[in-house]
Image (cartoon, rainbow over all chains, first blue to last red):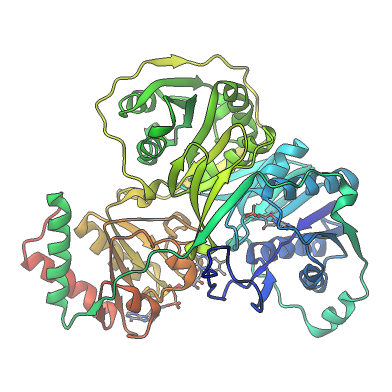
Amino acid sequence: MKILVAIKRVVDHNVRIRVRPDGTGVETQGVRMSMNPFCKHAVEAAVQLAEAGHADEVVVVSIGPKTANDVILTALAMGAHRGILIETDAELETLAIAKLLAKLVAEENPDLVLLGKQAVDDDSNHVGQMLAALTDRPQATFASAIKVEVQSLEVTREVDFGRITVALPLPAIVTADLRLNTPRNAALPMVMKARSKPLAVRPVAEFGVDIAPRLTVEKVSPPAERAAGRTLGSVSELAGFIAGDIAEMEAL
Amino acid sequence: MAVLVLADHDLGTLSPATARVVHAVAELGPIDVLVLGEGIDQVATDAAGIAGVARVLVGQGADFTGDFADAIVPLLQTLSANYQHIVSAAGSVGRDVMPRLAARLDLMPVTDVVAVLGPNRFERPIYAGNAVQTVTANQPKQVLTIRASAFRAAASGNAAPIEPVPHQPVASAARVIAAHRTESDSPDLATAQIVVGGGVSVGSAEGFQLIEQLAKKLGAAIGATRAAVDAGYAPNDWQVGQTGKIIAPDLYIAIGISGALQHLAGIQGAKKIVAINSDAEAPLVKLADVALIGDLFTIIPELIAELDKLGFKRP
Ligand SMILES: Cc1cc2nc3c(=O)[nH]c(=O)nc-3n(C[C@H](O)[C@H](O)[C@H](O)COP(=O)(O)OP(=O)(O)OC[C@H]3O[C@@H](n4cnc5c(N)ncnc54)[C@H](O)[C@@H]3O)c2cc1C
Ligand SMILES: Nc1ncnc2c1ncn2[C@@H]1O[C@H](COP(=O)(O)O)[C@@H](O)[C@H]1O
């Protein structure tokens, strides 16, 4: 089968972000960027399926500025075969991202599209589900295991009550959760080799998609600060605090 | 115009999130609650009891088993003609279904809403809760998911009319092979008043029973870090944080938890935080209202004994 993986370049998940004092957004200038962690799990899953002989081609796509090339190179170094950058300097909403990906799915016709379950910058958790709607394909979100059967997948999903395993006919859309696998770190020879793999750069305008935003972000604010705490000296003090706090809570 | 709320339920029980969602959107218009599934009479009755609910619409059918988005969305899409807001809790069903519905309606969904400022103005957290966005949605309808922990529950005592919704069953392309439910009699994590959370330092599944003992003593729900879940000490549905459940209890007791950004994302709404940790420099100790420095394996049994000494009891 052919697999398309959508990957996003985001502020590295270890960076403690700073809200701009004027409330216009989060400071991304001079901040370390990397592949969205969930997307890494999606790439790893695709590469593992290729290594197991289930997939013959893994194509990765990222939508964003020229610099998003670096996450595509990371995915190619992990073992993906070909990359596509849909280039735009605009900050796109998830609806526009899903529409662009739907156009690409129509062109590439992959049997499986893998995405991350959410991007850790906007924390939306939308695009996989929206792409499934626009391409009229079944979806399995929050996947922690994927098994290939004949023309179908067995996907285990992490849900509120625990886990649910579902059979999903192909073609389908699957979004990756963190327990799906352990993404590899590409060895240096793979990183070198990635540079010679095909990487197409296509301007967003080529896709004829309306990317005008639907939401106006009025402001971005930091969360409320918590009051400073104190350290207790003994377990009995702690027991007293907990009992007192619960008594207060129940009095309300 | 009216509001349609998709009820959240499992095994014939309405989740506590639904009353909170109803409260969150109470100002937006008359509220109909939609209950989908089989064996859902009690769910419908309980939904009808939530204050502020105008009608409960019931869609009975095996086609809704497994909560598959491709089976639920066609009915929501049909019903959406009569509503300006289509809303659910930001649980695993709402997160799965609502973006799919929004794309079908050519709408941008607004998800994980923590404040409703008006019919089309909302606040939602981004960057694991390290920033909050205020957005205005310039579109004719809104598809929303609500972070239940950010709102109080609507009162009960209502008896709204319950009506069947006729619908053409749409079978999902997918089918359930197996479901694995975590057996636990502890309260619902996402809406619990008290949560006891354990980290990977608990060291084993048996070690986690210490956390469970304290939780039982306090009548608390049980939470865990991703590291504890990954290690197999706790089930995945106990995970708290950016990728797990978001909690806002009155009291959170974090035991052997370092306080990584992604874990903190899930507990920002907690009123009081207690940290028990061997490391005085751990970020969670710095953040906590009250901290005790020491070894959790000595502290927890002592704490339970001290609470007994105080005659502490919770129903
Ligand atoms: C994209 C992404 C999403 C993530 N989502 C989540 C999420 O939703 N939830 C989540 O929790 N994590 C999440 N993580 C993982 C997170 O970054 C941390 O790795 C994790 O929270 C650490 O768990 P921990 O506190 O149990 O372990 P550690 O960080 O290893 O901390 C262990 C703590 O226990 C203390 N300790 C050790 N021994 C004892 C003892 N005997 N007595 C008392 N204290 C002791 C130590 O001092 C330390 O503070 C995510 C990570 C990524 C990359
Ligand atoms: N700009 C983008 N380019 C490529 N893929 C994206 C982009 N934005 C989101 N995605 C994909 O959609 C997933 C979910 O993102 P989101 O819905 O924004 O939380 C991500 O993990 C990616 O797989």
